[in-house]
Image (tube, rainbow, N blue to C red; front, top):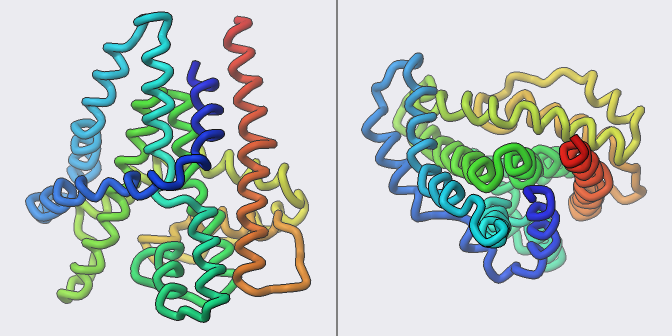
Amino acid sequence: MNFLALILGLAVERLLTQLFHLRKFHWLDPVFDLAFSKLKNISQIAAPAATLGIVLLLILPIGLMEFSLQDQLAQIPLFAFAVLVLLFCLGPRDLAEEINDYRIALSDNDQQEMAKLSREFLEAGAESESPAEIEAAIYAQANNSVFSVVFWFFLLGPTGAWMFRVLDLMRRRAIHHSELHAANGGDDLPPLVRGTLVLHRLAAWIPARLLMAGYMLAGSYDGAVAGWREQPEPTTELFPGPDDQRLGFVGRGAAPESEADDIATRAEIALKLVRRTLWMIWCPALAVLTLYGWIN
């Protein structure tokens, strides 16, 4: 059932662009802010456990709802619930929409909008006019926006998808608090920020490697392997982390060459590779696993 709900959710997502703003879940920001404020002096050892406790508390309602819908009316309500949760767990912003907005800003020479979108790709208040950096960020952000959500949805259903989305939202808020901490003269990352980053990277670790394999199969295998061999630079503990950098290396290596090397062209190429990986590699692989589970 998870696979059928997944396919339906991915298929209808593009028809609901007017609802994308609801996926930002800004109402969770005060919850995260309270946690980062109250637990700012927590120990480094206890921080990951505290992060896990916060995430479990926030996913509990979805888990209880999923459990209550089991075996009800031939699982039709559970199927509808799973599709709805998936639709709101993808994102929070749509990659295609962001890239289209960036192209419009480029054509209008809207420097302010370009800087804003660049920061959304690269996070942590950074901005860039480098096509390579923007393209690499798209390959990495695809894991946070889509592929990790798909992975956990396939494994644990709507509760798994919501778990990763909550963790990613908390990570994004952690980056905001790390900037405030640095602005106030702090050197090291606050313990809860570091704990959030550690837990997020653990949750994204397997999907990231499966996504790298998908890029290799959907694009240039030789180029992707060459990208895999590049060593990430420890430039920041935030974004891009080691796995984010490696996703960028592999994605850029797998992507086809183009005569034009501007940001809009490279971003469009990146989006096409991400979509091929999703629909031509991941979805068929998940279909095979689903059929194998039914047969056995």
